[in-house]
Length: 158
Image 1 (cartoon, rainbow, N blue to C red):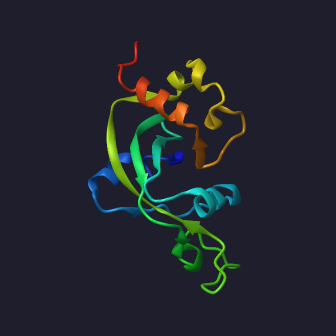
Image 2 (image 1 turned 60 degrees about the horizontal axis):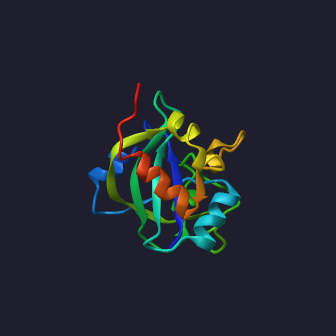
């Protein structure tokens, strides 16, 4: 099994939005970064687990657990001129962008803030903590995934 971190701005699509659709999965559309696309296309498998991270918001951090619910397939938004993620170079015969469906897996007892991630030595190599990293999907090691779940078991001190 692989582990992942998926980032989304909560005003665009939040963990709560995904949960309201459970158990129905949601296509993770609009990824337009080749490295993130390659993670979905080449490494993700149904059943893999991921953390859902809220970014670009007042309280960024890990909001919950999701799972990969499909094999990769072409992102239909690449073909639609009305979509922000439209790509005029993509065709149904030669799609460029790939997606997977994701589904709600579990709530966390307590969200894990970006500040808590940063102050946890076991997470020092976490990709989202690296300066300049803007990928919407990043791999996690099993240790990183489980360390974040462990952090969620206790309320933050403030």
